[in-house]
Image: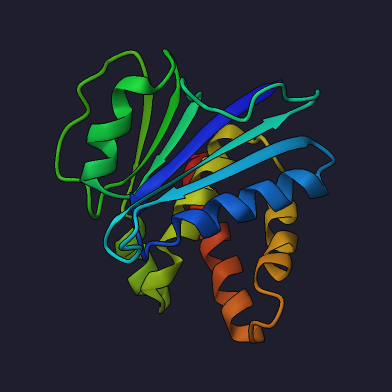
Length: 179
């Protein structure tokens, strides 16, 4: 098994955090992992993406040219990465912020209003965890429990409320992804 994932959106949407949580969870699940963040100089509001590879065997190259899955948080990222997604690839889309149709018919899109759901649960900053949970629910690449455990590695000094709402967001997204 080798899964190549690109997470993409705007700076400030927690794109790099999403990738870190996924990478930590894969490590906790005893997988081989690579993680490469990429963001513009302006950070918040600029472009941001990261690549994560999860595998049962050693990974020769950390570069992701043709991802098997995309987690897309805004329209600009969909425009940039949709054509690169592998045939039959999984596409998780934050439909709250993506305002166009998918042009390809050979991929598996899942539309999830991550930003709206995040507002409903009380913290708009958790939209990234909702999208990540949906990815895990559909792909089943890593147990949800490993993602939950990895949050304390990513936010070691976070208050319990921050960890709890992120766990709630992961669970809500995972539930949607399973459907």
